[in-house]
Length: 252
Length: 240
Image (cartoon, each protein chain N blue to C red):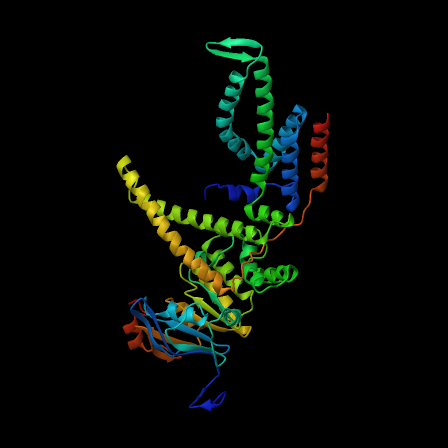
């Protein structure tokens, strides 16, 4: 494999996570039809496509939450195995921020929610205390430890859900439609956090319908339609955007 | 946002903090219930009414009103069914000296216990209570179940509120007939939603390597002086 070599005016960078001919079906309906996806180390890959294109299903495979009926997911070149021990390793490496924070929050208080992953990794209480404090400062929610999650605003819940993933220090962070339901301040906040994660060397895979957000942060666009990847590149061609219902700078 | 127990608990002023508050309230409750002395009841009632009022203000009185609806009729029954030397006769009811004594003792004991429990409820969130239980070496699986159930109730109430708003905004409760049909529909929808939410919750837990352990945090205990003084006062009350 050509790694880091200049090739046709572009760098071919080592793939951090990739899928090889991935197939998945709910009941008898094929959702993914031979997806070959690749996200490069330290880059932000934007996954775009209309509703029902298979974006979330693909993302769930990257964390080992779904098992493909055919094909494989590779992290650092190694295929994922689906036994309990291997999955823990995968999930330690790949963090997943769900679209709806209410679906992700499993604990009653902010502190418990952020400490949840660390406790599962078997960390001791002192270490958990330090890491949770840092994570809360990182997302700008210092002092929120004892607040109850169900009493937070939508933007605060989103920040808690991001903190609860980054506190586990994953190398790859997946964000499923992170700006949905957020106001302008909330979106700006997510943009800042995503940029900071990139600066810290994390590989990011983000699915979104928010094109302003996508243009602000993307290194690469991957467009899905009908369970397949139909485009992979650094810009979005207008004809493909039109075909896949992507809203560009003009309202469509 | 309307006021819930959770908001009251979070915003209440606390003179005794951390796990100590739970132990303090439970020990006081234990001493009060076991005591046979009327002084203990009066003392507990006074102390914990002051503490609860200081913590949550008028909310304490508002909540105290609810159990009173049950307690006062019960005391009336105690008053009239206790046999003894008749002091007063009202229609078919005979009130005896023993009945008055028993009703006063039962009433004071119940109100004293209630004031202690309300103090605990008004100042302590469920996660704080669970954290204190862990100090008492309650098995891990009970703590895990308690935390998860609490979170599930929060989710279920959120869903119920959303569905209720959706139904109300489209005149779901316009008449009695619609009320029954909407309530049935809502119950069914909540059941389905709870199934789907439980699936999502499980997925979210798996994504973070769920191992069956729920983190529990203890706040640093303070207010020892007040707690010890109150406990000593109640204990002396028991001995008088």
